[in-house]
Image 1 (cartoon, helix red, strand yellow):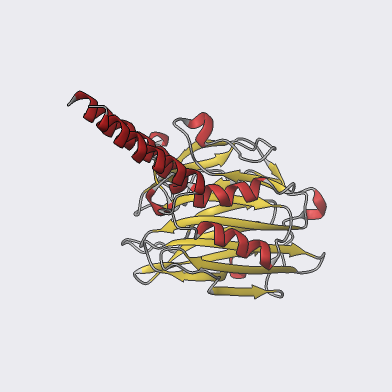
Image 2 (cartoon, rainbow, N blue to C red):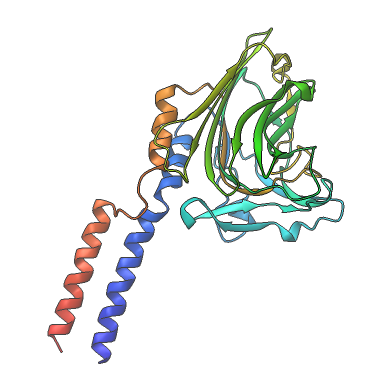
Length: 308
């Protein structure tokens, strides 16, 4: 009996190792693609057992995050919860639906220099429905303030669910809707922006991961409305708020952020599609190496039972 229990335990352990290798591969593959780009400015995946790893910048630039609170917020109430697909970790700010100034989120430990006139923002996120009272101020996914507004992704109330918006310029009137989302859906948002010295060219693409989108189904572009220069001749820099305003003290995001990155170039359509393909790889399908582990587990179990 003892041998049989140990055989089963060994087999299950090997099975668990193999499945774990595959389950977290979708987001991990996306982040590996981001990290392979020499122009990656910062990346946050929120993985790890403590803040030394889950708040670390995945790029070579070490723009690490720290906890920050506003009003009656408590930094200890920031949570790290299951991410896209129910595995890995996503970051969930502390929020107060009644006050935009109460809560806790993450902000870079110092200013990030925006020394490029073009970039790509990527975010894997899940937004919640808004609760009463109405929140007309919006809540940030990713924000900087380099003299001009650089509110890359921001969520607003829109009926029972909400909308993600983007703003570049010195007025919130520059705001454009990226997507009207259904609360609870996991989304992959890719936003590109470039500045030519006179106007900002902004394009956004969204895939609904919950619905199994294999291509970007929501897209838009704007070349005229955005007049602000975040780039500021190469001298612009700002602290970056992730799930909060750029100083980390207000307007905390309602939802979860699994992964966010900024790359100092406009990615091609093929690059963006390749990253979406990585996110859509079935989590339950073992890699070839995992198949070998599963076979070994079955063989080991059989052999140990025969030895009884």
